[in-house]
Structure formats: structure tokens, C-alpha cells
Image (cartoon, rainbow, N blue to C red; front, side, top):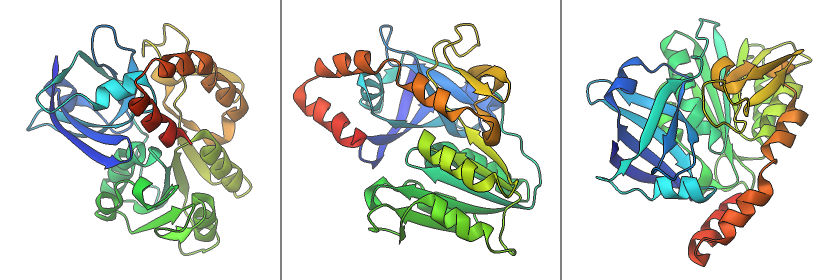
Length: 285
């Protein structure tokens, strides 16, 4: 069992969990993830390790309640425990000294982006971070990212915080300035956002790395559920990723695979109490 040390609400239905997991905290690297089960009957949920404290023996997870299993995880109180936290899994982020790097995060992708941006800054890169959300309450970790970013640019669709618009507009502006144009772009967020970022950087041949979140079950490459098409090869996000060259990813196939179990998800949601069901529906709109 893995004790919950902290459970903080960051945004509507988004929680930051600090979990006691000393072995994972000792060996985890940026970009890696764990697979979590709330109890013995729970679904296996892959979650990026947002941070780790080796001295305290804890890891930080960012969780958005979008279904029955994630709802159960975020409702685990401080002092309670998760049944399983398996990991670290996946390949670590390729950290090099590229010079200028742009880190682009959308929605909960900002939480996944956080350990990557931090590691890139610690390696000596000049990091410009661009984060976006529907409105002000959905902007995550702005202050934390300010600590090591040369600049944090915030965009919201309704203009309630930062500049109005999408992260792609801010990235294009950055690319058009020779003094700030990045050598590498990291993008994490909804599939349409990552795809749009890649189409923006492709003509300029700016290396673009995306973090993918296909359906994942065992996390060891055995089940094949998380397979993605990258260039001319089939890859498994759990062992070959989760980060890939965005210019080679087949985003259409990825989108199709993410919608495979929509009917089953809707059926499970229909069994929840109305109050909890409405919370999840609100987040998905």
C-alpha cells in the first residue's frame, strides 16, 4: 500500500497527490511514469511522475478525474492509501544542452511538462514555457514554472488570464523572433494541440518532441494496447516512449485508438451518482 501524504486541488477536478514511494523516488528520472490502482478492483491508470523527493521518499502525481477510476484516485484522502504504484516505467526524457528550448503545455499536459522543463533548465538550457487552458482556473503550475523558465507565456481561450488564444499562436510568435527561436520544442497536451504544434514547427525543421498518452494496460509492452505508429514503425508508448519525434507520429491513428472504449466509459459513468457524474461531464465539455 502507498500512503497519500498530500492531496491538493489545483484546478477543477485536477489534484496534486504526494505519495510515499521511497524506492521509486530514489531511481525515477524525468519523463517516466507509474501505473496506479486505487484498490484491488481498480483500473490501471498511467500517471507521469511530476516530481520526487528522495529524502522524504515521496513522489508527486497530477491526476485529472475524467472517469470512474481517476475519480476514485483523487478522492483518496490524506492518510489513505493506493493499492498499487508500479514503476518507474517508460524511457527517460532525452536531456541535452540544446540552447533555447520551448516547452508547450495544454491543460493537464502542463503537469506532465513540468518535470521535463525543470530538467531541461537544470541542464543549462534557456527554457521558454508556454501554457494554456480554457480559462484562468484551468491554468496549472504557473508559479512553479516561473522558478526556472526564462519566461512563462500564458494563454486562455476566453482571455480570462494571460493572452487570449491558443498556445500555437504564442509559439509562432516565439519562432518568428531570431533572438528567441527555439532549437527544440517539447509539447504535451491534448492530441489536437500536439498535432498543431508539430504542423507549425515542421516547415521550419525544428525538432519537436511530444509525450503520448494512448490506452495503456500492463506498462511493460506485453499487451500491445499502447501501440502507436511512428514513421514506418509500430512503437509501444510504455517501453519505447512516452516521448517521440512529433513529426513522425501518426496522430490520426492515435486519435482513433483513444476513442476505442468510449461506449464502455459512458456506461461506467452512467452508474455513478449524479453529483459525481456531473463533475466529470463538466470537465470534459
